[in-house]
Image (cartoon, rainbow, N blue to C red; front, side, top):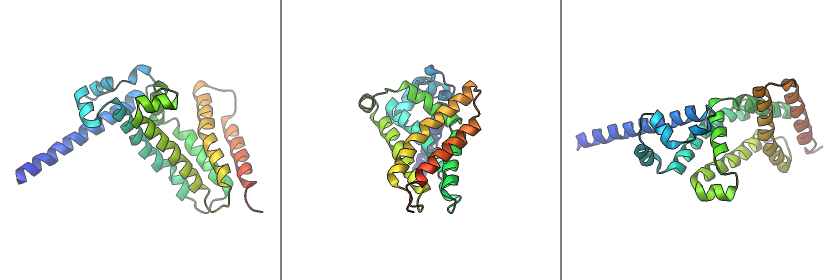
Length: 212
């Protein structure tokens, strides 16, 4: 019986190692930006596994993409949560600046590039995405919910209107993707100045909702 338990633990460790290798290979491959990288079978081959191994570990391609999203979300949440707890007494403007700076630098990471490439290959319409990739859609939906919760926590205790926080939370990711795109393409604009302007505008908008 003891021998069977040892074999089971070894088997579980091998399975976990295979799963981790596939997820790491997926992020590396997707981060290249190559549209052809959005292929679970290609990623499996690059990690030294088979399509059968992908099915065993994740069920299907939908489960695989959902696992990739979840893996990167865990790392993203660890990074983003740092600015909500590092300076609990920080004034409003500093909190806005911390969020903007974190996203500005984070969107250039390997994880972010991988997810952008994956999302570009997925259906645009939510109904179609949910029909074809229900687990992937659920993971993306959880991202939005988690981001809103993170932003509400970031401004907790300041008396800011929660509706305005939701609006700002909805705006910031798209705005930062635009600035990151400008940085990657090359721009004559002063992007540091652009970030300061966005920070000041959002801080003023949130400040106006606080009790006098």
